[in-house]
Length: 358
Image: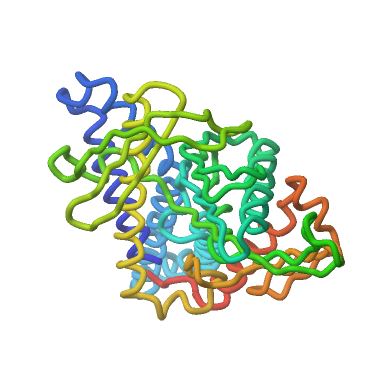
């Protein structure tokens, strides 16, 4: 954790220098990006600087314990317990701020929901998840934007991508990544049999523009038209921008009822997010052992939750949480689950980390 905090401090200091750089000051768009990232780090870095200052005071006080002056030693002995108490309190605050890892302070993320096994029923379940997350975000006053959607004839989604912006958005929503399973009787089922189908969710922190250097030469751009079933979520015919990142092979396709320029901006935004996510996953794999006790890896193949309609039951398998209020949760009252997941990781972090002595 100290390595992560040191890196955040270095990044913050770089941003401080950039905010007074004449070249950046002359570019309002770039300055806005720098200022936004600077603001997202300010609270965490401010606490870490106070923590470092307390550590410095403790070190100086401990030196005084060896002084020949008895009065100075006595003063140091009296001050040291309070300084250590303040350090422990500040460390607890830093732990709280960093729940969710190095991207906990992100205020922007991209959520992708995809229908899995189960055909039309899985697509309808993907739409249920979309509505659940949209209502949850609205209750939190987070901004939600549909980046792309592939609707089905029955009103479901093959897949849908959302851009979400708000304070604490990634810290909370990251635990939704993984496989979601539904057990219910489909409307088309005449014999009343319960069917099981699935959808996958991926939540990725959205990087700032300056963090991922993406040039036009790095990707191939294709423009074409695609028709769809229409409905409430997307126009029946829309121009589509498809970007293929040449080095990684990552493909992003965005269709929107508005201009190609807007489609391209969205596609670049999603491509940068996926490139950043690939970089994150590679780094996490190197230190996976340190995260083995945490509530989720973000792997879509990991089944994290079951939604059982006959019992009105939701079970989160990572923390053995079962609630008999499925109707409320699908209505957007997801906070009880997200709070439980954050609290679980909080307890794991506190159990595994002691207050550093320097």
